[in-house]
Length: 483
Image 1: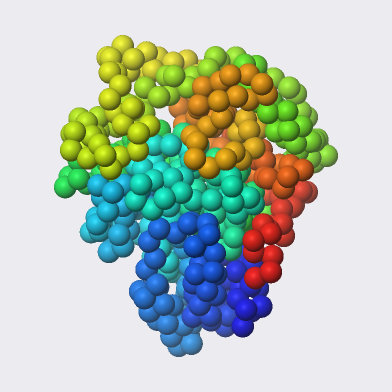
Image 2: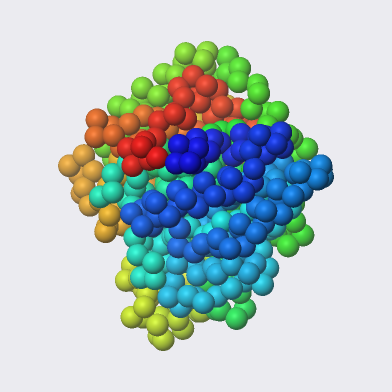
């Protein structure tokens, strides 16, 4: 039974769905394998913070009946799915990683969750995050820290850290994260898997963290988007084909392009594409190991027939402005009320952010910087089809810190390692992280693929072509190899 469970957990979500449709695999078998692995690994890794095992098994039995009775099956019929604890799930506890919301049970699903359930997916539980998603490592006072499966002394990143760990270890093949400054790309890079931040508005964001009964929790309305975290590009294309599309509840949501993303990734011809490679933006400090591994990964695109140029868009460090945009999008009034009452239960770095005296000029200056970066990136990409960068400036680092103080011997800010991700929450462009390679110590390094405004399709195509040429699918952490 253990070997059978292991085989099921190494399947992609697309394979699980196909075998269920073909009656070669039972939804109950899949669900049993998933929970078997979760119970084995979660005590060490802390990927899941809330499980809904009873309801998930019940849903799997119903899904099996539908298969056996010959009903028409949806694309994800009977397939287990993990949801980040920042994304509301009807009837399933959603804590936002905070003691303050410890017992909150939403009465409606996020739009993307509702669409996945309509497509036949079964929610197995919620994955761990930092408090309210305000950090890019995964640790909170309610559930504790999440560990990287490639090295338990290292962080998986965040804020979708639990989701990435779940997928990287086969606890589930499919998960949903979200990304307001790298929160999807950071942990997929640190965990050696795939994640795509869609174009801003491609996937509707509602209700997000907002709930009138719980002031303080808030989505970053002009920065954030939901997206897939998966082992394979095909699985992310499948999820996007289900969750993308407009909703009247999100004023930023984009019209339906009419694209089938699974069809899009069948075209992996990259010949003739002009690609810019920026190893450091011209100003960022990057760990030499990251620089070496990502530079080697870029050569894959040369082998695919692309024309590569080292080039920089020419903007300066936007991270101070980015922090002010987070403040602008946050419910600061509500957060400050919470801080007055619950300070002892809150993360110290979040408290420092809340208590900072943000001025009107801080917020308006940040808006100006965002527009400048938008214009520079759009002009830059008139000459290029795609841009490649390291996903992050460093390999996975130790748990217990929010970021390294030094990179390549230079003292840096604690957020400097995020120099490559946050700009594309400011511009709204689609960006994915693919595994570039592994360090000598066996730690994953990510390569970021950035598309033009609204060109999610080319980012997915390029990701699929790269995956085909430099596959990572069969590389698993040591912790799961014997399972």
